[in-house]
Image 1 (tube, rainbow, N blue to C red):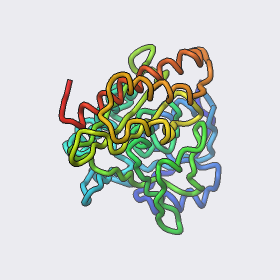
Image 2 (image 1 turned 180 degrees about the vertical axis):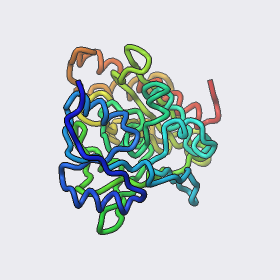
Image 3 (image 1 turned 90 degrees about the vertical axis):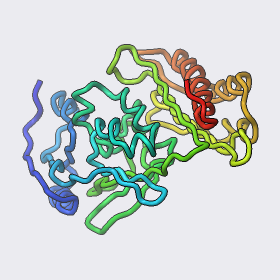
Image 4 (image 1 turned 90 degrees about the horizontal axis):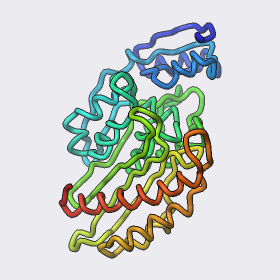
Length: 293
């Protein structure tokens, strides 16, 4: 199957992009890497009247600004894997991107496109959520900051308003005594995740006990979700052992209500949440203490 007919406009700045979006109205969509949109076009799941190509709008590279890693929205997945600043200051993201699609997808896909697509199984989305990242969004009226925790609404739906475009993703840099981990289960390499778990832990400055912890889940709801704070509260102030980690992971799993589909049952997904959450929390705690596998 081929896509329905559409007009094509290439722009060379984000300001031009949002003005074109405003001009053409709700029937216009942005295309960057196209790794999600093009299959939807070919299957006629999406039928825009105009495609606005932003590939010429942004040639910037990741930069450090104080305690923040600024990732331009057009940063390709391959750059997230390989760029020294990302590997040093946001290793969770660099590691998780290895699980995204295949080489072709990673060469073309962009971080801004991944967040705007709002795939509920998204690796990048779950990492951005657990890291408390922010999206810089531009419209004809200027810029605003949208916390990623407020960005994802439901299946393939975000809080972006027409004609807004994501221009940057802001992530706090990873420092010593912070640990991270990403685990997912797929049926085959490059498949969508059945379940994915991203974990982040910060230790107390004076002792190897947990000061803060976050867990994000993908593949269990209509959007990527963050485990409620009370579900990980048991970890705060202690150096968790395997029993405690298993108990916390079980609570996170009980809170999830995944649906069944052709790929997996809801019960199987819930079991994966428990297993992967325990692994991710253990790995994150070990990394925060300076231990590596």
